[in-house]
Length: 54
Image 1 (cartoon, helix red, strand yellow):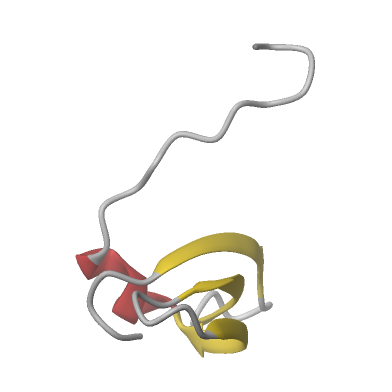
Image 2 (image 1 turned 30 degrees about the vertical axis):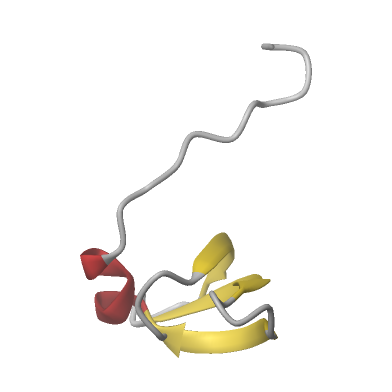
């Protein structure tokens, strides 16, 4: 993932090594698919409101 990409995590595979993500890069390009979960460790999480708990 490029630095500054904003993605949401939608799933983790059975081994816990691959994460399914969707989001946008700084350049406005959309990204979607599987990425190594350890690549997400360098991205700062952003809180997303949960429906009903806003």
